[in-house]
Amino acid sequence: MTDTVDRLSVWAGLVAPVLSMCGVLFATVASPRFAWTEHALSELGAASGPVATELTRLTFNGGLIGGGLVSLGFGYALLRAARNRVELTGIGLFGLTAASMVLIGVFPTPRPVHFVVAVAFFVALSLAMWTYGAGNLLAGDRTRGGATIGLGGLNAAVWTVWGLTGEFVRPGIALPEIVGAAALAAWLVGTAIFVRARPRLRQ
Image (cartoon, rainbow, N blue to C red):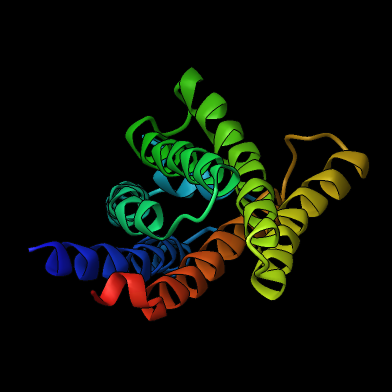
């Protein structure tokens, strides 16, 4: 039973980014007016507006909700593979990241809470990766720790550059948004593969 749960949890880490990224990218293609340099990704899931349609709302919001919930399922495998308290703290922050992703889809723009949960998602994303990566380093896993910290830094860097080069809420914000989403997707896939390969999860 435990082995089955372990495997399902690892698969959750692989499936979650597929659900979220495919949902987002499909919505960008399905929208008749969406432009990367003019809109925010959240406009694809908006209750109304020139970018969103019934199809984009379904795929964008559904992809985030489904991807976030499945990501939470990956938490079990992460906990089983944790080697120190710093990694455990990073896993907790990852849980906040996944929960924020779900809430972005549950509360689409222009609901006031949408902005709050969107900011929480990108902030928690970097904090989770920095903390979990630091735990990797403490466990002697330098390559994986460095890569994880680097992905968190990439997300933080694009938002820092974005904020320093103009008004924060302006056309084209979809560009830094997709970088952060891609960083999370890459981390999920890489971490799921690593966790699956650990002997502890094959016992």
